[in-house]
Image 1 (cartoon, one colour):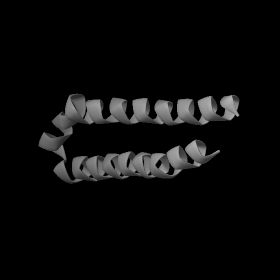
Image 2 (cartoon, one colour; image 1 turned 90 degrees about the vertical axis):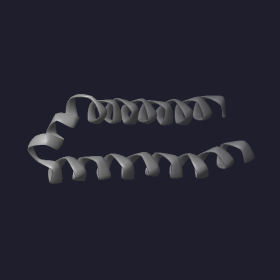
Image 3 (spheres, helix red, strand yellow; image 1 turned 90 degrees about the horizontal axis):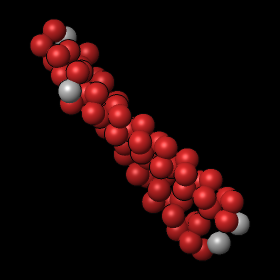
Length: 69
């Protein structure tokens, strides 16, 4: 049980770190794209937001499932 718990929690943590890296890139270096191609930049920000909310949604179902086991 503990192996499954730590595996799922660790994978979720890795996805959070990945989302933080992408959002940091969009905040710093990717913001230059706003000057050259704002529509493309907006699409990237929307996709990053969808990814972040998907990770949140997974955690909403994952945490109670692990808690109830």
